[in-house]
Image 1 (cartoon, rainbow, N blue to C red):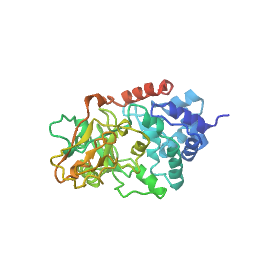
Image 2 (cartoon, rainbow, N blue to C red; image 1 turned 90 degrees about the vertical axis):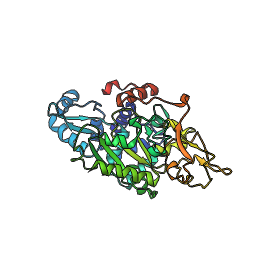
Image 3 (cartoon, helix red, strand yellow; image 1 turned 120 degrees about the vertical axis):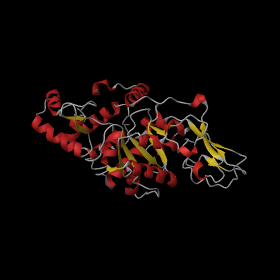
Image 4 (cartoon, rainbow, N blue to C red; image 1 turned 90 degrees about the horizontal axis):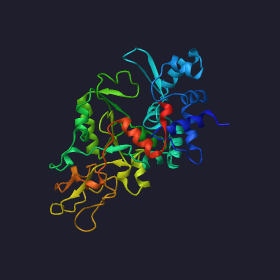
Length: 362
């Protein structure tokens, strides 16, 4: 007999984002930490679209007196989404993907046991599907001052423009860095660097327990601090509806860590740019080498050389070059990939590529 956690795992894997089944059932042990059996059972019956408690009660045959407090508890535990409709004033609830979604909302609950269970899940291929199937989960936002001035750069490819066009700003501790620290593998990069954005709603994070509301100016300061530290600006791989900028490292980030498992890193993160060395200006000083987290730069002789298969076009190397010899340029046109228009387009493309049909969850 299949238990509630296995049923929930199957439902989560039907979402285009994927929840990969692991050979040793690490994916189930992770869900067992997050959900009680009762919570897992209810979550496995939720839809991605919002429903009221009354609608859900009628659909699954559970009394509203039972269902409503359980839904609120599940929302408090970061297991599901809940919001009050601005149009009707009614409270609605919905299923979330595991990532980005349930995992990130465990930030306040995470302890060393959860961190180790996640690590076991990850190392047994838990993120393999979401990382290996197009479209990529992340796009890299290049450091603006590293880009060749002759290139046409769109506003959604410039971190500062994305921040400036938002209506609300917040900051979170990086859950990936916290997870690694809890298993005694901390990194030296700054950790409170995950910027949350609300494109259209003011004061969006005032009631958010995990996100500290900040000003636009503070968000821009965090971007600069992250660049100076050598972190990589990443966000969702789409043209509109961007609501976060992560500042990532390859030692902790669930997406960037996966690069070592694939032959071509730019298949894991979308980027249309690549570092280029002006050999006449390069002095071979090696200032850029330690900055590159992807190990894409080397100095085999007197001049820096870029490994095109490893460079993801982040630009953190270029801003420390004392000779201004490193610039980001366009990848060859046949390597360009058009970003999905929005989250619906991304999920549609991902579902088709994976061969899954999430229509029952809509």
